Amino acid sequence: MKSININELQSNISKIVKLVEKGDDYEVIRYSKPVAVVLSSKKYDKLLQELIELKGSCRHCVEEFKKTKLQNIKKI
Image (cartoon, rainbow, N blue to C red):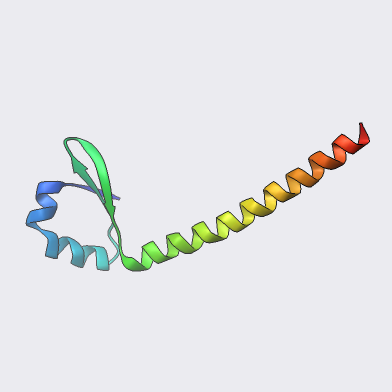
């Protein structure tokens, strides 16, 4: 991921958007701190889908953990 300061982004937004469409990602820096990320809509959609899948698998893990914990408590 490339870094770009906010002033450079404002001055070159059309160019940056074209580069993002081609696959580049940018971390936007303001006052030496990261404040935003610019990425393509395709990559954003992929990240959202991965998050949804991860949430589902985490929910499954929590349920399994609770079942195991309950079974262990019953054994005591």
